[in-house]
Image (cartoon, rainbow, N blue to C red; front, side, top):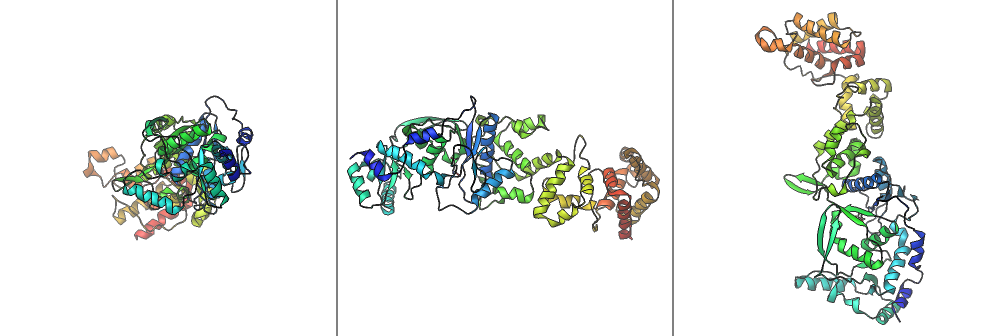
Length: 548
Ligand code: GLU
């Protein structure tokens, strides 16, 4: 009896690995092309940190004419949640980050290296486990949960490393005959990797992001096939990334400490190891403490949050690139209108430790992003958002022609308006352009009702003419100011404040507030043009009525 007999007994139907090695040939790509992936577990929650990894990975692939694929890591079936795959696929789609290969919905996939869903790859993992078993590089372990617990308790009491390794690995030294006998007796087993490592030896690893790191070798005999016949993450990682031709593994740095194990697995399987880029997590400042963005505590940890708030996916990606690379901001300043695809992201320049997530900054980035949109695009996006989340806004936007004019205000300037950060702000932001009842008039400097009334009345009677160009329009407000004892130039007012009641800026504010109910709006001339004569007159008259 030898290991081959044991392998045949345990995996009678598994194919020889040559079958898979031929089925999945090496990819025919240009030199330097990066093949990488996003490999989430379908837990039903897409974390912004996951999207961040996917963005970085996808960018690395796209920049090199490589391949970005999506692999669903569903070997831990206890954690699986219904519709989770659809959630992942849709999130990538929402962010315009669909993969080149892999799942495109819950049941379909693209690409020649599949299946891309691990639970459908059972026979492949078993073939490779059989291959290791046949060489004596893996063995069967019959330890029960209680026995493993007892080992751990002893290790903890003795204050030594826990785990299944060296002298603690009870089943490591079973003979082939003993293992075969136990299998034949119907004992439960799992398959463990027979580690060749020694804890007192070091390996050197060069990580693209973390740089040079030294680790002790792995000496743990980790589980490769569980009792349900499915692989553990570690084993599936080695088999899949080998067969799928991954050149670069871009993943969370929680896996950095597993690198010695992974390199050993690649080595023993006879595979060429990929390069690794371990990304630091996105952090949050929680009352002065830096901690990971948490699924439980922080709504913004969920990718869905951005969709619900109506923060455009472009803006989120733009912000994530800010986090990913300190040179992004500068690049953006120099190239305000280029798409982010043109930015060259260098993995090796990414931050070694976790960057802080800053919502204020994100909304600021979002304002700039939206300021670069055409009125058409603002309309489309705001409308689509409203269609799903806000019936009132949808109603406001039903007159597309008018809405386009509203969104067009100060949009064609060299410095376009920057007042919209998210679609959920739009209703509040543009409501005054619609027939709403203004209840609050924060007039500010000029607050004597009679003075305000005079300004508004005179403006209606003598100065308002819809046909005026902007210069004429403004000259008239100056003239009106002079006529009522306000300085028509701010400068003149500053030189001789005692001579005037206030200045032309304050008069403008009176008009602005009467028209819109607010002191801060985009260009008032454009607002009047878009509102049109009737609305302007009505607004001013109703402001007068409210003062009486
Ligand atoms: N399924 C693993 C996770 O979600 C993937 C890690 C990897 O990218 O290899 O953490």
